[in-house]
Length: 527
Image 1: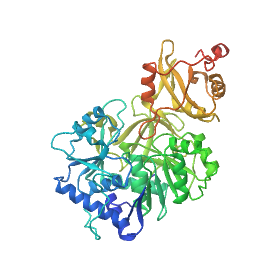
Image 2: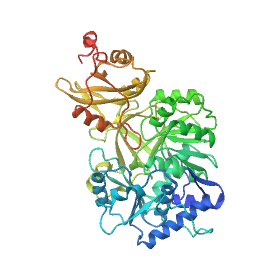
Image 3: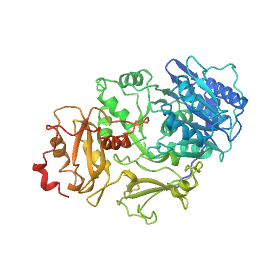
Image 4: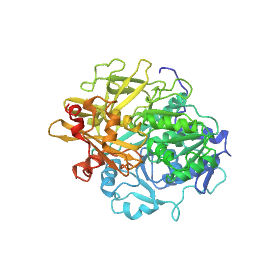
């Protein structure tokens, strides 16, 4: 879309506007912790001043390893207000995972959950100040002055955030995002998924992740709303809190929607306060979306993006044509194209699959200390996402899979997500994943990993569901049943872990009851 939008120079400008127009509005609710916008700013300015007192100067990096809390919300804005670049990390990282990121980011200060003190101390770089945060240690939400100090406002082209990507295939890469890129993306998203003044926003996904920050922390401040931070996901408690706090905007992931729908109290819960739900961080199966909307009457708007894109590139509009199964059309000032995966230069016609490339003002400045990787994904002004998708004649994008997750079986390219969507349409399947594994005959074979709600569901029954809906070369060789699938900290199915489990032979062979009757299906399984 080419329409122009108005955005703040930074999210700190946006926060200051919220404080000036709604100082007494509740900004943060997290357990027993509450902050008005006046108190919020007070805490932020005091922490930013303290960071500068500790020697943090503009351009330095301050790292956070904090679980969901009011302290984490304050820390995000306070680091940016200090002039430093925020480096949010997953507090569950192992020491082996932390060491290379510490070396790459070179932080001046590390703010971490108090319980991590003994974990971080032995591997933290020398001369780095490590500060324990949380109950029983230093709190960031205790303000000492009734009048907030002036907020330091950055220039749009200065670095705001160094967001490390997942790192499932090696050392995580640090994505440099400017203040202007992050702020304009808030306005871009707002154009398709508009909020209301004073929105009651619930954030369940982790605040160290770009999705929760964009669709929770910044979204709430932009509409002078109240951000209800969930510290630990419990379906029953979340359902109660939606009703108790009259939540109007729910920002969640597919795993969370599934967890809520599987809870025994879901059908009886009064969720009429919900105005709109946003799904992100992973692909939402269409069947899950339709079940949620049928029960709650609340629309789920699914979008698409990635850390390198600030993060939002597309959204299904709240007001306008929504196409379930797609991730909507581009946000303003953004272009998305589908190109051939081999060269990345040949445009694919509508309906054909290829690699997604995008350009817009929200795209990253590049990877920190990785010029080669930057030049590989930023080419001729385009961000090459590594995702496979297709555009329809209306410009709506459908995500097929990650480029690296494509499985080549018997010479055919297969995208596991297509099979997963069909699996999710089965009423007795609660969760599912499809991976490719080495196969002497086909090169790679497809394995379906399924969580069933009824133990009577067999592998043959799963195949009977799949076979009329998929061409033969897309049929899994095996169906294996799990109690639960492994998830990443941001609630995505951890396919890297599943592949490792297969290699380690910890994904057990099916029982006789769950073994596919290949004799009955042989003619259809010889692709």
